[in-house]
Image (cartoon, rainbow, N blue to C red; front, side, top):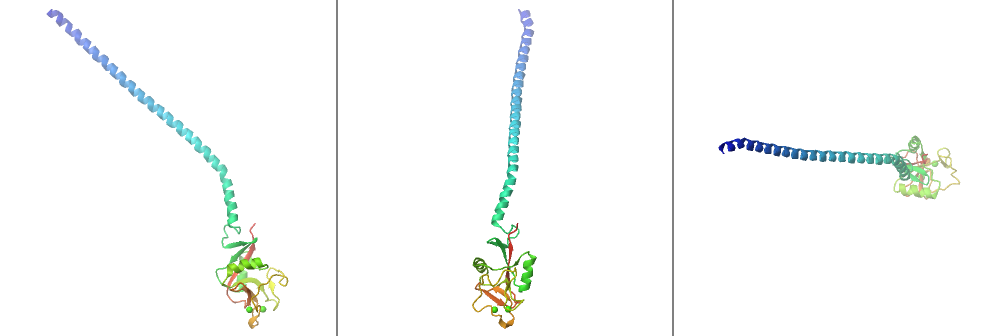
Length: 217
Ligand SMILES: [Ca+2]
Ligand SMILES: [Ca+2]
């Protein structure tokens, strides 16, 4: 019996070892399966992210190309808006629009001749006030100050002339009462007086001035 017991012991050990080995194998297989599952899930997530990224990129690209198509139209609209807000040109904001022309009201005083020259340097001329509407615009803008206009009798005393050749005798006038009076026999240039009415004064007198020019093309 003892011999039988002795002979069975090694077989039991082998069986036990085999059992352990089998369990280890199962354990590793399970671990391997779970690792594979994790890797598979990671790979699928990665693919999903790549796909979403590619879709987003294509949509951004499509929107960007649409925007590029719209840009010229927007630029055109801004350009139209600028010409409405600044009809005398976005770069000429000191020029004011009235009834189809652009007007510059100086911020410095000078003589009539220097004022005339400065207007000409700016491709304009001293304002010719040939209508009550224009007078009203200039008068409103120049109130309480004196501004030169393009009217003189330097060439022949009492023969007033507009600098653009407009016929003085048949055109609107707005002289102050008692003017032009050629005071001191030396008043040959006209300005809009503080009340808005016109006065003749000596041409070297220094006051502000109004230039006018046609609308830019
Ligand atoms: Ca005079
Ligand atoms: Ca006078």
